[in-house]
Length: 130
Image 1 (cartoon, rainbow, N blue to C red):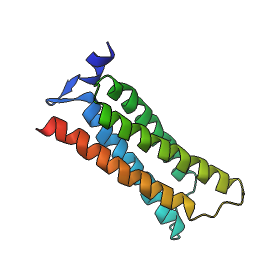
Image 2 (tube, rainbow, N blue to C red):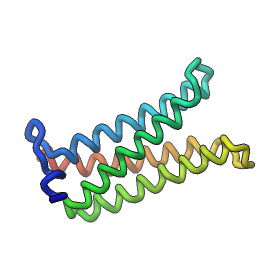
Image 3 (cartoon, one colour):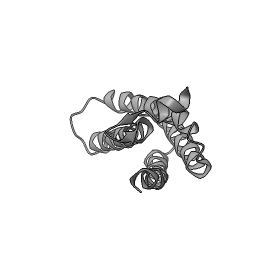
Image 4 (tube, helix red, strand yellow):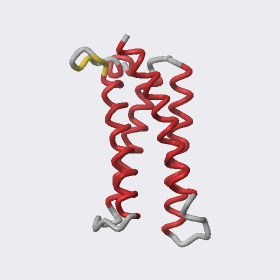
């Protein structure tokens, strides 16, 4: 059942492929919104955590479907990636609540997560493009 949803073809590629690309795009947009706010753009702050929550929701759905593929190395990288994003979110939330955590840890953790996510996505995409 889950495998049928995972491999549901859209323009010849499985649904999990498009969910991964959407998730990557959402996390990059989230990072760009945060960067723009940090640099003084007039964007309401609430858009950054809202986009982060949306991206994490897509990541969880993508991850649940990806487990049905049975591709262990890619699944492990995905689990590491989503864990890093959850930690990034927790750091951001604690900074927002006024805890004594230096702000620099939030973008460093987000950059690390995006780097691991790009490796994860490159491996995943290479499966479906070959």
